[in-house]
Image (cartoon, rainbow, N blue to C red; front, side, top):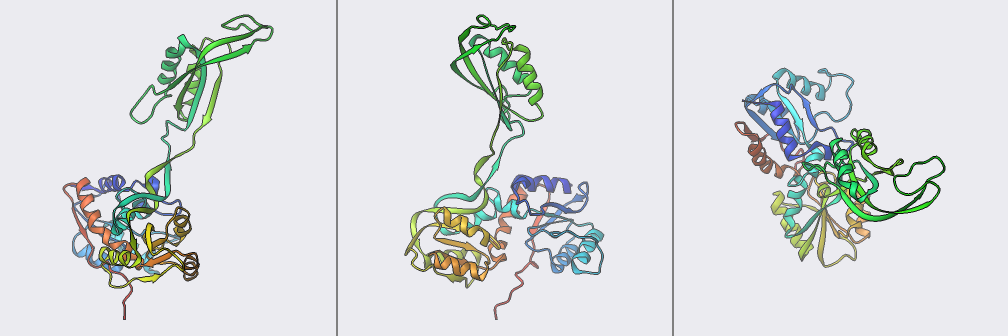
Length: 373
């Protein structure tokens, strides 16, 4: 028997929550982490119809792509539909987990699935996520006589510096020449006070985390032979990830015409029609295409900056589409959840792989609210 915590950890492997948008509400939204589960239901929108399907199927947990709780609530009661739904979930003992933009950003996530429809090419995030391990927030730089480098390195490593992932004692050492002149009353390790001295040194650099920094600097000073050891603490910028982030861009191996791109997306998304605004004066063949599931209009400008001449999403504001068309960018709109729901079977397969002994299903009651008439 699995638990809700097992589900949270499994979803964290598929879609790490640290890459979700700051404005989003992701993770476990309803339920006890120690509750037992044997059946999980996947959906895009957790509606009353999906809840009924879950209760009739004895489901103990729902993974709802869109957060069931998104805006702050002052109360949970049956006086509104959202409160009634939450109360029903709690009374039925059904946990709810939402990955939303974490699943968009993750490698192999929803946005990668969406960009794969168009063909072969080099794929990258439109806006890359960035990260820096907790043990790599700063760089400690010092200069030491060459015969003391190993001693200083070991002392700093013992205090927690030089850790990168599962590796310890990581450092860079570069030979250099240094100068100094000690004032009256100093006791330099090399030469005489009052004289300009030149020494052959090694520049030693080791990453370190904020928590370990005081101890690492103290360890450096304790073994360093200089009366005044040089110590520089340099903040490090976060590193962009090549496979994680908001939106996706593909640079195709072979250029495609707009009609071919449209046909490929109709097939991938299982739709008969799409709303298309062809860019004025745009290219006849396209090599660079951007996409974002759902309501991805805010990503359009970033996609254009990195060369996209076609942008695919679910829905966009009318005036943003007009502006894109005037700039020569073609916009393809497939409907909000049409760009999302087709990923659920793949998510089911992936979740079953990391959550064994648990039945995972895709909701049949979760459908787009729109009807073409």
